[in-house]
Image (cartoon, rainbow, N blue to C red):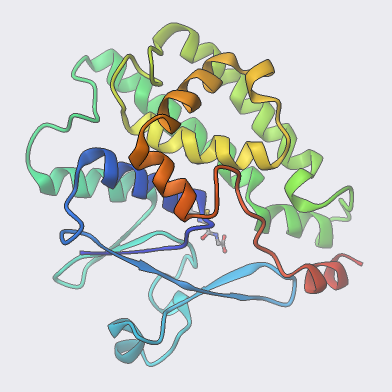
Length: 249
Ligand SMILES: N[C@@H](CCC(=O)N[C@@H](CS)C(=O)NCC(=O)O)C(=O)O
């Protein structure tokens, strides 16, 4: 299988952390980092690398030919089937491994708590703090308040949802989001915290339980290594500043 991802993408990092914490061998899921271009608004657009077989097959470097959603990550199976959406990708890889996943709590209630955190990050937080959404709000809807990464719209949604997760963690967290074992919830939450730190959210002060989980996850050398290879423990800003300025103005 092949995973098309980009290291600046928090959704991609969810799957990379999952693969590493689940101990999936590197030859089972080959990582293909997409190329990057920028549209007229300065927003990143993914491209198919020219040395990848999909480039020859599809005869274009337009990533939308591979994934009409235009988003990373994407999982390409050996038989050519594709899967998108991180929750579905992780479930599929885990099911294909064919044994009970150590990353899913056995207790049904705790499993549901894990899914709850996963969904708050994937459905209620990430889409509203995603840089393309913020740039759209600035350019089309006149919300020219600040740089996209520190934009109050982005900070509003991160703060709102982190407050909810903090309450959940008070009840179910141990070292990690759900008890003392790494679960899917951590794979989803940690990249979102990395994004929040780029927006100057005072994590330790405002969200002590999220901070605890963050510190414990970063103490795992494999997780730290993923962030370091992706540009550091704070989300890097990937926009074309010149195009963005022209668009917003
Ligand atoms: N709900 C999707 C989110 C994927 C997503 O938003 N990916 C971002 C990068 S973090 C992306 O590719 N954005 C490009 C775009 O929206 O055009 C998932 O869980 O896979």
